[in-house]
Length: 278
Length: 290
Image (cartoon, rainbow over all chains, first blue to last red; front, side, top):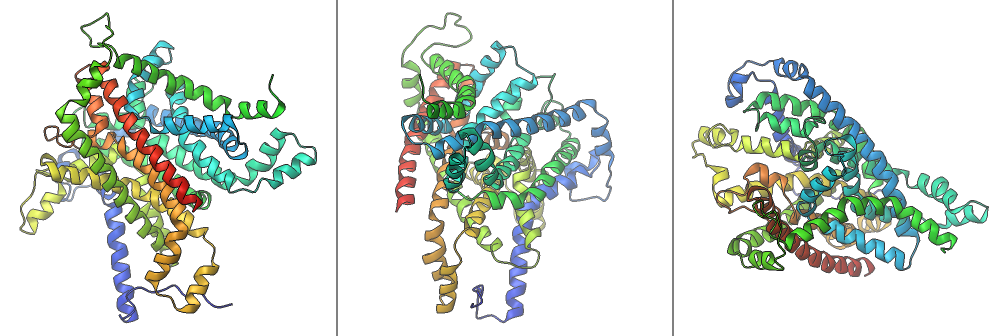
Protein backbone atom coordinates (compact mmCIF):
# COMPACT_ATOMS: atom_id res chain seq x y z
CA UNK A 1 0.00 0.00 0.00
CA UNK A 2 1.44 3.38 -0.98
CA UNK A 3 2.24 5.91 1.73
CA UNK A 4 0.01 8.92 1.77
CA UNK A 5 2.33 11.89 1.82
CA UNK A 6 0.91 15.09 3.16
CA UNK A 7 1.30 17.60 0.36
CA UNK A 8 3.66 20.28 1.60
CA UNK A 9 3.07 23.94 1.15
CA UNK A 10 5.74 26.35 -0.18
CA UNK A 11 7.63 23.40 -1.67
CA UNK A 12 10.47 25.56 -3.08
CA UNK A 13 11.84 26.54 0.31
CA UNK A 14 14.37 24.40 2.17
CA UNK A 15 12.91 22.17 4.82
CA UNK A 16 14.11 24.01 7.94
CA UNK A 17 12.87 27.43 6.87
CA UNK A 18 9.52 26.00 5.93
CA UNK A 19 9.32 24.43 9.36
CA UNK A 20 10.24 27.67 11.08
CA UNK A 21 7.69 29.59 9.03
CA UNK A 22 5.06 27.01 9.89
CA UNK A 23 5.87 27.17 13.61
CA UNK A 24 5.85 30.98 13.64
CA UNK A 25 2.52 31.16 11.82
CA UNK A 26 1.05 28.65 14.27
CA UNK A 27 2.34 30.59 17.25
CA UNK A 28 0.85 33.81 15.85
CA UNK A 29 -2.55 32.20 15.27
CA UNK A 30 -2.59 30.68 18.74
CA UNK A 31 -1.59 33.99 20.27
CA UNK A 32 -4.38 35.83 18.47
CA UNK A 33 -6.92 33.25 19.60
CA UNK A 34 -5.82 33.17 23.20
CA UNK A 35 -5.04 36.88 23.62
CA UNK A 36 -8.32 38.10 25.16
CA UNK A 37 -8.15 35.25 27.65
CA UNK A 38 -4.46 35.80 28.41
CA UNK A 39 -5.30 39.43 29.05
CA UNK A 40 -8.13 38.38 31.32
CA UNK A 41 -5.80 36.14 33.32
CA UNK A 42 -3.20 38.90 33.57
CA UNK A 43 -5.85 41.36 34.77
CA UNK A 44 -7.05 38.91 37.39
CA UNK A 45 -3.55 38.83 38.90
CA UNK A 46 -3.17 42.61 39.25
CA UNK A 47 -4.14 44.58 42.35
CA UNK A 48 -7.01 47.06 42.12
CA UNK A 49 -4.59 49.94 41.49
CA UNK A 50 -2.91 48.12 38.62
CA UNK A 51 -5.82 47.29 36.34
CA UNK A 52 -5.69 50.50 34.32
CA UNK A 53 -2.10 49.78 33.38
CA UNK A 54 -2.13 46.03 33.15
CA UNK A 55 0.93 46.05 30.92
CA UNK A 56 3.03 48.14 33.33
CA UNK A 57 4.10 47.52 36.89
CA UNK A 58 5.23 44.37 38.51
CA UNK A 59 2.92 43.79 41.45
CA UNK A 60 1.05 40.57 41.12
CA UNK A 61 -1.35 39.20 43.68
CA UNK A 62 -3.76 36.39 44.32
CA UNK A 63 -5.77 38.77 46.49
CA UNK A 64 -8.53 39.12 43.90
CA UNK A 65 -9.23 35.41 43.99
CA UNK A 66 -9.24 35.45 47.78
CA UNK A 67 -11.65 38.37 47.87
CA UNK A 68 -13.96 36.80 45.30
CA UNK A 69 -13.95 33.41 47.01
CA UNK A 70 -14.83 35.12 50.29
CA UNK A 71 -18.13 36.37 48.83
CA UNK A 72 -20.96 33.99 49.55
CA UNK A 73 -22.95 35.22 46.57
CA UNK A 74 -20.25 34.16 44.14
CA UNK A 75 -19.89 30.69 45.61
CA UNK A 76 -23.64 30.38 45.38
CA UNK A 77 -23.57 31.55 41.77
CA UNK A 78 -20.97 28.93 40.89
CA UNK A 79 -23.04 26.17 42.46
CA UNK A 80 -26.22 27.40 40.75
CA UNK A 81 -24.57 27.60 37.35
CA UNK A 82 -23.08 24.12 37.70
CA UNK A 83 -26.37 22.56 38.79
CA UNK A 84 -28.40 24.29 36.09
CA UNK A 85 -25.89 23.49 33.34
CA UNK A 86 -25.77 19.84 34.32
CA UNK A 87 -29.53 19.41 34.66
CA UNK A 88 -30.15 21.33 31.43
CA UNK A 89 -27.70 19.05 29.62
CA UNK A 90 -29.31 15.86 30.91
CA UNK A 91 -32.87 16.93 30.16
CA UNK A 92 -32.08 18.57 26.81
CA UNK A 93 -30.51 15.35 25.63
CA UNK A 94 -33.37 13.19 26.91
CA UNK A 95 -35.83 15.33 25.00
CA UNK A 96 -33.90 15.93 21.79
CA UNK A 97 -32.42 12.48 21.26
CA UNK A 98 -35.89 11.01 21.02
CA UNK A 99 -37.19 13.83 18.85
CA UNK A 100 -34.20 13.55 16.52
CA UNK A 101 -34.71 9.80 16.33
CA UNK A 102 -38.31 10.32 15.31
CA UNK A 103 -37.28 12.80 12.59
CA UNK A 104 -34.73 10.38 11.22
CA UNK A 105 -36.63 7.07 11.30
CA UNK A 106 -40.18 7.97 10.32
CA UNK A 107 -41.68 9.71 7.33
CA UNK A 108 -45.15 11.09 6.88
CA UNK A 109 -47.18 14.18 7.70
CA UNK A 110 -46.34 14.13 11.45
CA UNK A 111 -42.60 14.15 10.72
CA UNK A 112 -42.91 16.85 8.08
CA UNK A 113 -44.95 19.01 10.44
CA UNK A 114 -42.56 18.55 13.35
CA UNK A 115 -39.57 19.31 11.15
CA UNK A 116 -41.26 22.43 9.80
CA UNK A 117 -42.08 23.57 13.34
CA UNK A 118 -38.50 23.06 14.47
CA UNK A 119 -37.17 24.90 11.46
CA UNK A 120 -39.46 27.87 11.96
CA UNK A 121 -38.76 28.20 15.67
CA UNK A 122 -35.04 27.88 15.06
CA UNK A 123 -35.34 31.13 13.07
CA UNK A 124 -37.30 33.12 15.62
CA UNK A 125 -35.06 35.81 17.11
CA UNK A 126 -34.48 35.47 20.86
CA UNK A 127 -35.58 39.03 21.39
CA UNK A 128 -39.11 38.35 20.24
CA UNK A 129 -39.72 35.73 22.90
CA UNK A 130 -37.40 36.54 25.78
CA UNK A 131 -39.40 39.53 26.97
CA UNK A 132 -42.82 37.82 26.84
CA UNK A 133 -41.08 34.81 28.39
CA UNK A 134 -40.51 36.98 31.43
CA UNK A 135 -44.27 37.51 31.72
CA UNK A 136 -44.96 33.80 31.24
CA UNK A 137 -42.45 32.77 33.90
CA UNK A 138 -43.84 35.40 36.27
CA UNK A 139 -47.41 34.26 35.67
CA UNK A 140 -46.57 30.64 36.51
CA UNK A 141 -44.80 31.69 39.68
CA UNK A 142 -41.44 30.22 38.66
CA UNK A 143 -39.56 33.51 38.21
CA UNK A 144 -36.16 33.50 39.92
CA UNK A 145 -36.22 29.75 40.65
CA UNK A 146 -34.21 26.81 39.31
CA UNK A 147 -37.17 25.49 37.35
CA UNK A 148 -37.87 28.90 35.83
CA UNK A 149 -34.38 29.08 34.39
CA UNK A 150 -34.01 25.39 33.61
CA UNK A 151 -37.11 24.87 31.47
CA UNK A 152 -36.42 27.73 29.01
CA UNK A 153 -32.84 26.51 28.75
CA UNK A 154 -34.08 23.07 27.74
CA UNK A 155 -36.61 24.61 25.36
CA UNK A 156 -34.01 26.77 23.62
CA UNK A 157 -31.95 23.75 22.59
CA UNK A 158 -34.83 21.68 21.24
CA UNK A 159 -34.79 22.93 17.66
CA UNK A 160 -31.06 22.94 17.06
CA UNK A 161 -30.27 19.69 18.84
CA UNK A 162 -33.19 17.79 17.28
CA UNK A 163 -31.89 18.87 13.92
CA UNK A 164 -28.34 17.71 14.71
CA UNK A 165 -29.56 14.44 16.25
CA UNK A 166 -31.61 13.73 13.11
CA UNK A 167 -28.41 14.05 11.11
CA UNK A 168 -26.57 11.66 13.43
CA UNK A 169 -29.29 9.03 13.30
CA UNK A 170 -29.46 9.41 9.50
CA UNK A 171 -25.85 8.29 9.45
CA UNK A 172 -26.60 5.11 11.44
CA UNK A 173 -27.90 2.12 9.52
CA UNK A 174 -31.37 1.25 10.87
CA UNK A 175 -31.12 -2.43 9.90
CA UNK A 176 -29.78 -3.33 13.37
CA UNK A 177 -32.94 -1.94 14.89
CA UNK A 178 -35.10 -3.91 12.46
CA UNK A 179 -33.17 -7.03 13.34
CA UNK A 180 -33.73 -6.41 17.05
CA UNK A 181 -37.45 -5.92 16.41
CA UNK A 182 -37.69 -9.15 14.41
CA UNK A 183 -36.05 -10.87 17.37
CA UNK A 184 -38.89 -9.67 19.57
CA UNK A 185 -37.66 -6.31 20.79
CA UNK A 186 -40.35 -3.62 21.12
CA UNK A 187 -39.94 -0.27 19.32
CA UNK A 188 -38.82 1.28 22.61
CA UNK A 189 -36.39 -1.57 23.15
CA UNK A 190 -34.90 -1.08 19.69
CA UNK A 191 -34.60 2.67 20.32
CA UNK A 192 -33.10 2.45 23.80
CA UNK A 193 -30.94 -0.67 23.50
CA UNK A 194 -29.82 -0.47 19.87
CA UNK A 195 -30.11 3.04 18.45
CA UNK A 196 -28.97 5.05 21.48
CA UNK A 197 -25.79 3.05 22.14
CA UNK A 198 -24.70 3.42 18.52
CA UNK A 199 -25.36 7.18 18.69
CA UNK A 200 -23.34 7.60 21.91
CA UNK A 201 -20.40 9.48 20.30
CA UNK A 202 -22.81 12.06 18.90
CA UNK A 203 -24.71 12.28 22.17
CA UNK A 204 -21.55 12.91 24.17
CA UNK A 205 -20.54 15.59 21.66
CA UNK A 206 -23.85 17.35 22.18
CA UNK A 207 -23.54 16.95 25.94
CA UNK A 208 -20.23 18.82 25.93
CA UNK A 209 -21.59 21.61 23.74
CA UNK A 210 -24.84 21.89 25.68
CA UNK A 211 -23.02 22.17 29.00
CA UNK A 212 -20.72 24.89 27.65
CA UNK A 213 -23.60 26.85 26.09
CA UNK A 214 -25.63 26.81 29.29
CA UNK A 215 -22.68 27.62 31.53
CA UNK A 216 -21.88 30.69 29.38
CA UNK A 217 -25.43 31.86 28.68
CA UNK A 218 -26.22 35.41 29.66
CA UNK A 219 -29.48 36.84 28.30
CA UNK A 220 -31.87 34.28 29.85
CA UNK A 221 -30.07 34.42 33.15
CA UNK A 222 -30.24 38.21 33.14
CA UNK A 223 -33.95 38.39 32.46
CA UNK A 224 -35.27 35.31 34.27
CA UNK A 225 -33.41 35.48 37.57
CA UNK A 226 -33.19 37.97 40.39
CA UNK A 227 -31.49 37.82 43.76
CA UNK A 228 -32.52 34.35 44.84
CA UNK A 229 -30.76 32.44 42.06
CA UNK A 230 -27.55 34.29 41.19
CA UNK A 231 -25.86 32.85 38.10
CA UNK A 232 -22.20 33.22 37.35
CA UNK A 233 -22.39 35.16 34.06
CA UNK A 234 -24.74 37.74 35.53
CA UNK A 235 -22.63 38.15 38.66
CA UNK A 236 -19.52 38.68 36.52
CA UNK A 237 -21.18 41.33 34.40
CA UNK A 238 -22.38 43.12 37.53
CA UNK A 239 -18.80 43.68 38.65
CA UNK A 240 -18.30 46.12 35.80
CA UNK A 241 -21.78 47.61 35.60
CA UNK A 242 -23.92 47.84 38.70
CA UNK A 243 -21.23 47.60 41.37
CA UNK A 244 -18.73 50.02 39.82
CA UNK A 245 -15.69 49.11 37.79
CA UNK A 246 -13.98 46.23 39.57
CA UNK A 247 -12.06 44.91 36.58
CA UNK A 248 -9.76 42.85 38.77
CA UNK A 249 -12.63 41.09 40.57
CA UNK A 250 -14.55 40.53 37.33
CA UNK A 251 -11.42 39.02 35.81
CA UNK A 252 -10.77 36.77 38.81
CA UNK A 253 -14.34 35.45 38.72
CA UNK A 254 -14.16 34.99 34.96
CA UNK A 255 -10.92 33.03 35.24
CA UNK A 256 -12.52 30.71 37.78
CA UNK A 257 -15.59 30.36 35.58
CA UNK A 258 -13.27 29.45 32.73
CA UNK A 259 -11.73 26.52 34.63
CA UNK A 260 -14.62 24.02 34.50
CA UNK A 261 -15.33 25.01 30.90
CA UNK A 262 -11.67 24.49 30.10
CA UNK A 263 -11.60 21.04 31.69
CA UNK A 264 -14.77 20.01 29.90
CA UNK A 265 -13.44 21.24 26.57
CA UNK A 266 -10.03 19.67 27.20
CA UNK A 267 -11.34 16.19 27.89
CA UNK A 268 -14.44 16.50 25.74
CA UNK A 269 -12.94 17.72 22.44
CA UNK A 270 -12.08 14.19 21.39
CA UNK A 271 -15.73 13.17 21.70
CA UNK A 272 -16.96 16.35 20.05
CA UNK A 273 -14.81 15.83 16.97
CA UNK A 274 -15.63 12.14 16.81
CA UNK A 275 -19.32 12.80 17.35
CA UNK A 276 -20.08 15.88 15.28
CA UNK A 277 -20.24 14.26 11.89
CA UNK A 278 -23.26 15.69 10.17
CA UNK B 1 -57.47 5.79 17.99
CA UNK B 2 -53.83 5.70 16.99
CA UNK B 3 -51.94 2.68 15.78
CA UNK B 4 -48.99 1.34 17.72
CA UNK B 5 -46.50 3.14 15.47
CA UNK B 6 -48.26 6.49 15.69
CA UNK B 7 -48.33 6.27 19.48
CA UNK B 8 -44.59 5.60 19.50
CA UNK B 9 -43.91 8.53 17.15
CA UNK B 10 -46.03 10.92 19.17
CA UNK B 11 -44.50 9.85 22.47
CA UNK B 12 -41.02 10.44 21.06
CA UNK B 13 -41.74 14.08 20.31
CA UNK B 14 -44.26 14.79 23.08
CA UNK B 15 -41.84 16.18 25.73
CA UNK B 16 -40.02 18.33 23.17
CA UNK B 17 -43.29 19.58 21.69
CA UNK B 18 -44.71 20.40 25.12
CA UNK B 19 -41.66 22.42 26.16
CA UNK B 20 -41.60 24.18 22.81
CA UNK B 21 -45.26 25.08 23.19
CA UNK B 22 -44.95 26.41 26.74
CA UNK B 23 -41.70 28.33 26.43
CA UNK B 24 -41.61 29.46 22.81
CA UNK B 25 -45.06 29.34 21.27
CA UNK B 26 -46.86 30.93 24.20
CA UNK B 27 -44.39 33.83 24.59
CA UNK B 28 -44.40 34.42 20.84
CA UNK B 29 -48.19 34.56 20.77
CA UNK B 30 -48.13 37.06 23.65
CA UNK B 31 -45.58 39.10 21.71
CA UNK B 32 -47.60 38.93 18.51
CA UNK B 33 -50.69 40.07 20.40
CA UNK B 34 -48.73 42.99 21.83
CA UNK B 35 -47.53 43.99 18.37
CA UNK B 36 -51.10 44.86 17.34
CA UNK B 37 -51.79 46.96 20.43
CA UNK B 38 -50.74 50.24 21.96
CA UNK B 39 -48.89 48.46 24.76
CA UNK B 40 -47.04 51.49 26.15
CA UNK B 41 -46.96 51.93 29.93
CA UNK B 42 -49.19 54.99 30.00
CA UNK B 43 -52.00 53.20 28.19
CA UNK B 44 -53.52 50.64 30.58
CA UNK B 45 -56.28 49.74 28.12
CA UNK B 46 -53.83 48.40 25.53
CA UNK B 47 -55.95 49.57 22.62
CA UNK B 48 -56.02 47.48 19.46
CA UNK B 49 -54.37 49.49 16.69
CA UNK B 50 -53.96 46.95 13.91
CA UNK B 51 -50.88 47.23 11.74
CA UNK B 52 -49.81 50.71 12.88
CA UNK B 53 -46.67 49.44 14.63
CA UNK B 54 -45.65 47.44 11.57
CA UNK B 55 -46.12 50.46 9.32
CA UNK B 56 -44.09 52.58 11.74
CA UNK B 57 -41.24 50.06 11.80
CA UNK B 58 -41.12 49.49 8.05
CA UNK B 59 -41.21 53.21 7.32
CA UNK B 60 -38.60 54.11 9.96
CA UNK B 61 -35.57 55.40 8.01
CA UNK B 62 -33.22 54.24 10.79
CA UNK B 63 -34.55 50.71 10.39
CA UNK B 64 -34.46 50.73 6.59
CA UNK B 65 -31.18 52.51 5.93
CA UNK B 66 -29.05 51.70 8.98
CA UNK B 67 -30.30 48.68 10.88
CA UNK B 68 -31.17 46.37 7.99
CA UNK B 69 -28.04 47.07 5.90
CA UNK B 70 -25.91 46.65 9.06
CA UNK B 71 -27.57 43.36 9.88
CA UNK B 72 -27.14 41.90 6.39
CA UNK B 73 -23.57 43.14 6.09
CA UNK B 74 -22.79 41.71 9.51
CA UNK B 75 -24.40 38.38 8.66
CA UNK B 76 -22.53 37.93 5.37
CA UNK B 77 -19.13 39.06 6.64
CA UNK B 78 -19.34 37.19 9.92
CA UNK B 79 -20.35 33.90 8.32
CA UNK B 80 -17.80 34.25 5.51
CA UNK B 81 -15.01 35.19 7.92
CA UNK B 82 -15.70 32.38 10.37
CA UNK B 83 -16.09 29.88 7.52
CA UNK B 84 -12.79 30.77 5.87
CA UNK B 85 -10.91 30.87 9.18
CA UNK B 86 -12.60 27.70 10.43
CA UNK B 87 -11.89 25.81 7.21
CA UNK B 88 -8.25 26.89 7.20
CA UNK B 89 -7.79 25.81 10.81
CA UNK B 90 -9.61 22.52 10.27
CA UNK B 91 -7.31 21.72 7.32
CA UNK B 92 -4.34 22.64 9.48
CA UNK B 93 -5.43 20.44 12.39
CA UNK B 94 -6.23 17.56 10.08
CA UNK B 95 -2.55 16.95 9.36
CA UNK B 96 -0.35 15.53 12.08
CA UNK B 97 2.40 17.73 13.51
CA UNK B 98 4.13 18.07 16.82
CA UNK B 99 1.98 19.94 19.34
CA UNK B 100 -1.21 19.35 17.32
CA UNK B 101 -3.21 18.55 20.47
CA UNK B 102 -2.01 21.72 22.21
CA UNK B 103 -2.81 23.94 19.21
CA UNK B 104 -6.23 22.34 18.92
CA UNK B 105 -7.00 23.07 22.57
CA UNK B 106 -5.85 26.68 22.27
CA UNK B 107 -8.00 27.19 19.18
CA UNK B 108 -11.03 26.08 21.19
CA UNK B 109 -10.51 28.79 23.81
CA UNK B 110 -13.23 31.10 22.43
CA UNK B 111 -15.78 28.31 22.96
CA UNK B 112 -14.96 28.20 26.66
CA UNK B 113 -15.38 31.88 27.46
CA UNK B 114 -18.80 33.34 28.10
CA UNK B 115 -19.48 35.66 25.12
CA UNK B 116 -20.46 38.45 27.46
CA UNK B 117 -17.12 38.21 29.30
CA UNK B 118 -15.24 38.06 26.00
CA UNK B 119 -17.05 41.18 24.83
CA UNK B 120 -16.31 43.02 28.10
CA UNK B 121 -12.65 42.07 27.78
CA UNK B 122 -12.42 43.16 24.14
CA UNK B 123 -14.08 46.46 24.97
CA UNK B 124 -11.39 46.92 27.59
CA UNK B 125 -8.58 45.95 25.19
CA UNK B 126 -9.81 48.57 22.69
CA UNK B 127 -10.50 51.24 25.33
CA UNK B 128 -9.22 54.57 23.94
CA UNK B 129 -7.39 55.61 27.12
CA UNK B 130 -6.24 52.44 28.86
CA UNK B 131 -6.63 49.76 26.21
CA UNK B 132 -3.55 47.76 25.32
CA UNK B 133 -4.11 48.22 21.59
CA UNK B 134 -3.68 51.97 21.78
CA UNK B 135 -0.76 51.62 24.18
CA UNK B 136 1.04 49.40 21.69
CA UNK B 137 0.17 51.68 18.77
CA UNK B 138 1.51 54.70 20.61
CA UNK B 139 4.63 52.83 21.67
CA UNK B 140 5.53 52.16 18.04
CA UNK B 141 4.83 55.78 17.14
CA UNK B 142 1.35 55.50 15.63
CA UNK B 143 -1.69 57.37 16.77
CA UNK B 144 -4.19 55.67 19.08
CA UNK B 145 -7.74 55.49 17.79
CA UNK B 146 -11.03 55.87 19.65
CA UNK B 147 -11.93 52.44 18.24
CA UNK B 148 -15.39 52.01 19.62
CA UNK B 149 -16.71 55.51 18.95
CA UNK B 150 -16.06 55.56 15.19
CA UNK B 151 -18.62 53.81 13.08
CA UNK B 152 -16.53 51.52 10.90
CA UNK B 153 -13.84 50.67 13.42
CA UNK B 154 -16.57 49.82 15.94
CA UNK B 155 -18.35 47.71 13.34
CA UNK B 156 -15.07 45.98 12.48
CA UNK B 157 -14.39 45.16 16.12
CA UNK B 158 -17.87 43.72 16.61
CA UNK B 159 -17.32 41.66 13.48
CA UNK B 160 -13.89 40.43 14.57
CA UNK B 161 -15.21 39.50 18.00
CA UNK B 162 -18.01 37.50 16.43
CA UNK B 163 -15.65 35.74 14.03
CA UNK B 164 -13.31 34.99 16.92
CA UNK B 165 -16.18 33.55 18.97
CA UNK B 166 -17.56 31.34 16.20
CA UNK B 167 -14.48 30.13 14.30
CA UNK B 168 -13.91 27.21 16.73
CA UNK B 169 -17.43 26.05 16.08
CA UNK B 170 -16.75 25.88 12.32
CA UNK B 171 -13.38 24.29 12.98
CA UNK B 172 -14.93 21.52 15.08
CA UNK B 173 -17.69 20.67 12.61
CA UNK B 174 -15.40 20.84 9.58
CA UNK B 175 -12.66 18.84 11.29
CA UNK B 176 -15.21 16.18 12.14
CA UNK B 177 -16.28 16.25 8.49
CA UNK B 178 -12.71 16.03 7.22
CA UNK B 179 -11.93 13.05 9.43
CA UNK B 180 -14.91 11.12 8.13
CA UNK B 181 -13.97 11.54 4.46
CA UNK B 182 -12.92 8.33 2.68
CA UNK B 183 -9.14 7.89 2.34
CA UNK B 184 -8.98 6.29 -1.12
CA UNK B 185 -9.46 9.36 -3.36
CA UNK B 186 -6.68 11.17 -1.47
CA UNK B 187 -4.35 8.19 -1.84
CA UNK B 188 -5.09 8.06 -5.55
CA UNK B 189 -4.38 11.78 -5.85
CA UNK B 190 -1.10 11.34 -3.96
CA UNK B 191 0.00 8.58 -6.34
CA UNK B 192 -0.83 10.79 -9.32
CA UNK B 193 1.23 13.60 -7.75
CA UNK B 194 -1.67 16.04 -7.68
CA UNK B 195 -0.80 19.47 -6.25
CA UNK B 196 -2.11 20.51 -2.86
CA UNK B 197 -4.34 23.19 -4.32
CA UNK B 198 -5.94 20.83 -6.81
CA UNK B 199 -6.56 18.23 -4.08
CA UNK B 200 -8.27 20.89 -2.02
CA UNK B 201 -10.23 22.37 -4.93
CA UNK B 202 -11.39 19.14 -6.59
CA UNK B 203 -11.49 16.62 -3.73
CA UNK B 204 -11.71 18.13 -0.26
CA UNK B 205 -14.04 21.00 -1.05
CA UNK B 206 -16.68 19.07 -3.04
CA UNK B 207 -16.73 16.24 -0.48
CA UNK B 208 -17.06 18.66 2.42
CA UNK B 209 -19.79 20.66 0.70
CA UNK B 210 -22.80 19.20 2.58
CA UNK B 211 -21.17 19.91 5.97
CA UNK B 212 -20.17 23.41 4.90
CA UNK B 213 -23.65 24.26 3.70
CA UNK B 214 -25.33 23.08 6.91
CA UNK B 215 -22.82 25.05 9.01
CA UNK B 216 -23.41 28.17 6.94
CA UNK B 217 -27.20 28.00 7.19
CA UNK B 218 -27.18 27.45 10.95
CA UNK B 219 -24.63 30.18 11.55
CA UNK B 220 -26.30 32.66 9.20
CA UNK B 221 -29.57 32.42 11.10
CA UNK B 222 -27.73 32.96 14.38
CA UNK B 223 -25.65 35.83 13.03
CA UNK B 224 -28.80 37.62 11.90
CA UNK B 225 -30.08 37.72 15.48
CA UNK B 226 -26.79 38.57 17.23
CA UNK B 227 -27.41 40.56 20.35
CA UNK B 228 -25.13 40.17 23.36
CA UNK B 229 -21.75 41.11 21.91
CA UNK B 230 -23.07 44.21 20.15
CA UNK B 231 -24.91 45.25 23.28
CA UNK B 232 -21.79 44.86 25.41
CA UNK B 233 -19.28 46.30 22.93
CA UNK B 234 -21.01 49.42 21.62
CA UNK B 235 -24.66 49.34 22.67
CA UNK B 236 -25.39 50.18 19.02
CA UNK B 237 -23.31 53.34 19.11
CA UNK B 238 -21.82 55.68 18.14
CA UNK B 239 -25.30 57.13 17.72
CA UNK B 240 -27.20 54.23 16.24
CA UNK B 241 -24.65 53.44 13.58
CA UNK B 242 -23.77 49.88 14.65
CA UNK B 243 -27.28 48.88 15.62
CA UNK B 244 -28.30 45.41 14.46
CA UNK B 245 -31.86 44.26 14.19
CA UNK B 246 -32.05 42.52 17.62
CA UNK B 247 -30.78 45.67 19.28
CA UNK B 248 -33.32 47.79 17.45
CA UNK B 249 -36.16 45.65 18.83
CA UNK B 250 -34.58 45.56 22.31
CA UNK B 251 -34.20 49.33 22.48
CA UNK B 252 -37.83 49.86 21.45
CA UNK B 253 -39.18 47.36 23.96
CA UNK B 254 -36.88 47.83 26.96
CA UNK B 255 -35.54 51.38 26.76
CA UNK B 256 -38.45 53.19 25.10
CA UNK B 257 -40.75 50.80 27.01
CA UNK B 258 -42.92 50.37 23.93
CA UNK B 259 -43.46 46.63 23.98
CA UNK B 260 -45.92 46.79 21.08
CA UNK B 261 -43.55 48.37 18.61
CA UNK B 262 -40.60 46.31 19.89
CA UNK B 263 -42.58 43.12 19.26
CA UNK B 264 -43.60 44.34 15.80
CA UNK B 265 -39.93 44.98 14.96
CA UNK B 266 -38.95 41.55 16.26
CA UNK B 267 -41.66 39.93 14.15
CA UNK B 268 -40.61 41.82 11.02
CA UNK B 269 -37.04 40.61 11.56
CA UNK B 270 -38.28 37.10 12.31
CA UNK B 271 -40.20 37.02 9.02
CA UNK B 272 -37.19 38.22 7.06
CA UNK B 273 -34.92 35.56 8.50
CA UNK B 274 -37.62 32.94 8.06
CA UNK B 275 -37.90 33.63 4.33
CA UNK B 276 -34.11 33.70 4.07
CA UNK B 277 -33.91 30.47 6.06
CA UNK B 278 -36.38 28.65 3.81
CA UNK B 279 -34.50 29.76 0.69
CA UNK B 280 -31.23 28.61 2.24
CA UNK B 281 -32.75 25.33 3.33
CA UNK B 282 -33.95 24.62 -0.22
CA UNK B 283 -30.42 25.32 -1.35
CA UNK B 284 -29.03 22.85 1.22
CA UNK B 285 -31.42 20.21 0.05
CA UNK B 286 -30.50 20.68 -3.58
CA UNK B 287 -26.77 20.68 -2.86
CA UNK B 288 -26.98 17.68 -0.56
CA UNK B 289 -28.82 15.72 -3.24
CA UNK B 290 -26.52 16.76 -6.08
